[in-house]
Amino acid sequence: MSNELPSIPVHTSSPDEKATLTMPNGQTIELPVLAPTHGPKVLNVSALYKQTGYFTYDPGFLSTASCDSQITFIDGERGILLHRGYPIEELAAQASYVEVAYLLLYGKLPNQTELVEFGNQVTYHTMVHEQFKQFFQGYRRDAHPMALMVGTVGALSAFYHESLDINDAAAREIATHRIVAKMPTICAMAYKYSIGHPFVYPRNDLDYASNFLHMCFSVPAEEYKVSPTLAKAMNRFLILHADHEQNASAATVRISGSSQANPYACIAAGCASLWGPAHGGANEAALRMLFEIGTKDRIPEYLKRAKDKDDPFRLMGFGHRVYKNYDPRARVLRESCHEVLEELGKNNEPIFALAVELERIALEDDYFQQRKLFPNVDFYSGIMLHAMGFPTSMFPALFALGRTVGWISQWKEMIGEPNQRIARPRQRYTGEQIRRYVPTNDR
Image (tube, rainbow, N blue to C red; front, side, top):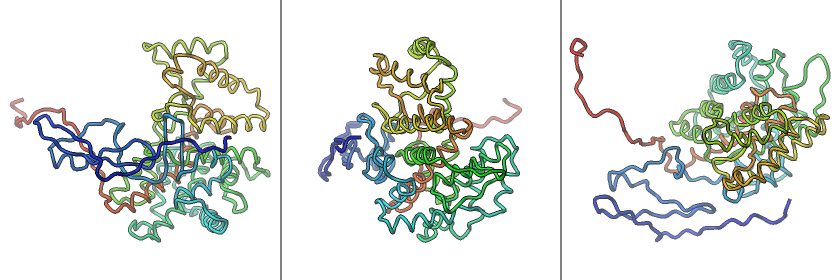
């Protein structure tokens, strides 16, 4: 990895910079131009309706900044992802997930004392109440792990009434520690319940990633030692998924929180949004695609289908809504994927060899180069998690585990905004014109 920091343009604010907008009636208004640290400048249209009677129209919020945030920056054109200014490659290579969690939550890397204190807060909140098990027993044995996650994460609010006051800074802090600490326990419980195994208690002598793997794969009948290689890979996976700016689930958490909902309900809402196949299910779709292709000799056939606009087949795990370059997370996870397969004796795994060959051919193809359809993080994460022993149904739950600290960081930042108001998007109404009610007998 290069020691040079990525080159990103830095903007300076100018309070006099404005854009002029001419309305259809000839009215001219000035829109303030806001400068970010990095990234595109922003037109402030917050007073547009009051001044003109017009709304802006932006389905999917593709050109709309919904908030100010100091947490995560993405430069999709250059393939750059920063957490609080730190490149994701450096964090994934050198930091622990708990260290990155502290960074996202508090805006700086912890010193040794802060890291120990925060780590202890997380470690000693990992257990859940014994009654909590009864929530799982109410679900069918074959319930999807994400169904369990959505329900049980929200149910945390039924156990911790004293930390529901979002206006109490101390209560917010306790809730933050509890959510980060208990999420791996709940995620592991969802996995164990889905395969009919007894729940495994967390262990305070293990680090965050190792503890999670132990809760997932150990059984009472025999000793289970966590592989350092697998723990390293899981640590990287969690870091790489910790936050990703204003994605669908983070925006869901913020919108939920804007109504002053409690943090547990907001994180459950994030889980629900992440469950969507276009968000948290992308790595599962990429793995299924590889199994559908099956062998290297069929790659040309499927690449031809991917280029055919009349064919519904899509090359999953390539391209990204934000990245128009190589996803920086994919490079890191590709390395971890190799290490996991070697550790498990699966380095000749046909599905991984197929993935590498598919990546090579696609990256050399003019069609994909021109459209900047590069491999993203989901392309390799599915293969790695499958090799580690996780079923595809667990993939979005693992994504949610990593993303939890990002969600709670976004929630905390939103709560602290001085002008925080309930989210209320506008619409362009295209329904019927006003009309009279007709009595039933006259219809």
